[in-house]
Amino acid sequence: MGKYEPKKVPYLFLGEKMGAFDALVCHHCGETLFESRASEAIEAEVKRRGLWGLRARSKVSEVGNALDVRIPKALAQFLSLEKGKEVILEPIDRNRLQIIIE
Image (cartoon, rainbow, N blue to C red; front, side, top):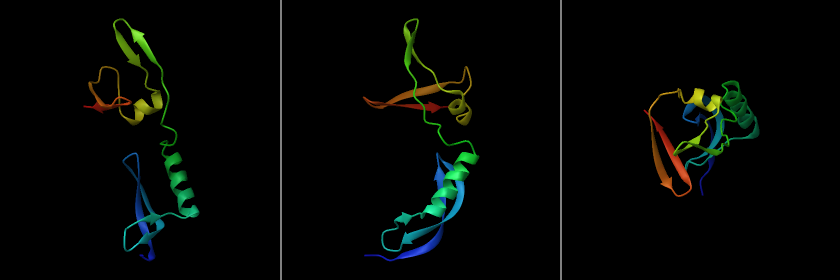
C-alpha cells in the first residue's frame, strides 16, 4: 500500500485548466484525493467560468426528411458553434453520438 502525500495538483474540467489545488496523492498508484475545501474551490472556479451545468437534455425533432437536435445557447457558446459551421457526426455506439467541430 502507498502513502499519501500532500501536493498541488492541476485540475481540468471539460478540457479547461482550472488551476492547481491541494490534494493528497498516493506515491504508489498516483490516486488523487481532493478534500472538501479543495473540492469547494474547484466547484467555485468552474461556476465562476460559466462551465457548471453545460450538460443539457434536448429532444429530437423532424425537419423535412431529416432529424434535428437543438443545442442550448450556453453549450453552443462554449463550443464556439455557430450557424453554418460544419460538424462531423460520428456514432460511438448505439446509445452515444459524438459531434466533432471542425
